[in-house]
Length: 173
View 1: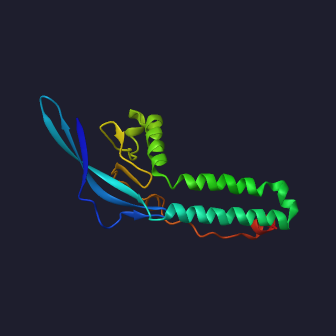
View 2: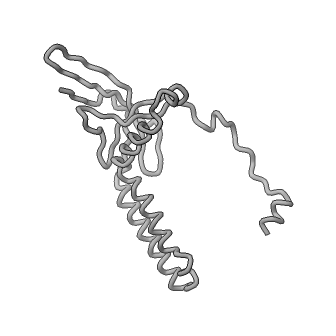
């Protein structure tokens, strides 16, 4: 028998994006059997969708689809570009990000594909957490392992300034 509970949920987010923010926490996992009881404390992060983000995304995507429909009616040649189909495909991809159960499934698939010893010796990536065989996630929240890391921009350094050479300008024109 296994129980899991969150301890020490951080108030300040570690990071924040357009759809969610991430907080550090500790997952307390109690395991009981006939012979022993153990308690493990595992550092984790909790990703939480911003309140109302799914509704905002649905509204924004409805506006996008409406604009595409209007553009095709105003400019009939756009019908051949399938702009409405592209908008629908884009809407499907973006809408998937409003359900963290999908991210949990993707993390598990990633681990099946890249969780072998060869990869694990070279890179570290988060694991989707489970307790009592069940995923620790919902549509609005996801618990994953905490992994120390380095920002990619710190490794690569500052990006060079984007400049357009006269030769490049001729090619563009």
